[in-house]
Image 1 (cartoon, helix red, strand yellow):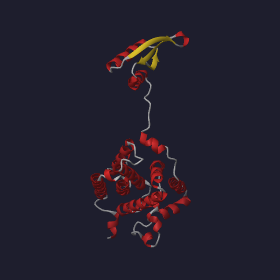
Image 2 (cartoon, helix red, strand yellow):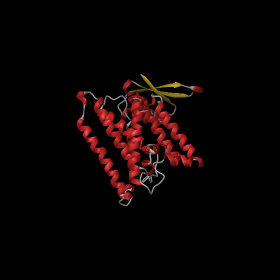
Image 3 (tube, helix red, strand yellow):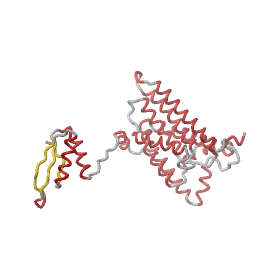
Image 4 (cartoon, helix red, strand yellow):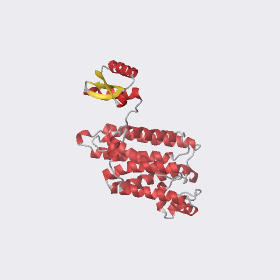
Length: 309
């Protein structure tokens, strides 16, 4: 016999008994005396295989909330301590955000944006201020903006840095940051910032690496996949407000393509799935094309860079 719990109310005992019987669970109820000599009913089941289901029924009847277990994928992620490059990027982003709250910080933020001259195409870049192609990803403009991005940077970033090494991780951030920054500038101009393009690159990389290499140690919980994909489309269709959708899409596509490459590269010869690689490559370019199509009509059939040609 395996003890499930105890009850004091006889009507609840009968209700529990009916529920267990309907499920085909064999049980036994015995009487005993608890504190202050009150009669209690002890519920036990005969088969260990029924303990979890019987406990769930018991908890539902008695109002005990179900226990929450973290997905096994997240347990692995949580076990990784924050890695150095990830931590340093978080610190820099937070310091820049705090600095931007003061008047003296406005000049620095302007210096780190992709351009401070919207009427001139890449004017500062042409003069040698190459850092502007990378630094917009470090800028954030509200508390929700930086909180969300830093949480995602911490969770996704440390996994990639831990599994692929610091050198790969650093160049991955720089490359995807550059691509998403430049693409967003071409579409909407210089007034944007944030790490979200890189975050989507992290997401695309982890998603595709596990998809193309099932033996990969780390994967994202399904809840994270649904959250990030859902957020992408909510932003794309204007539900959230004005968002750097092109940076999201370019980051996602660059991350997916990198993940596809490494997923194939790291998988054993007999498990290389080229059909899935082609499928997800096509999906990634479709998402990019859909984003550009929607943005083109959102901005009245015009992109920023077209003003200079």
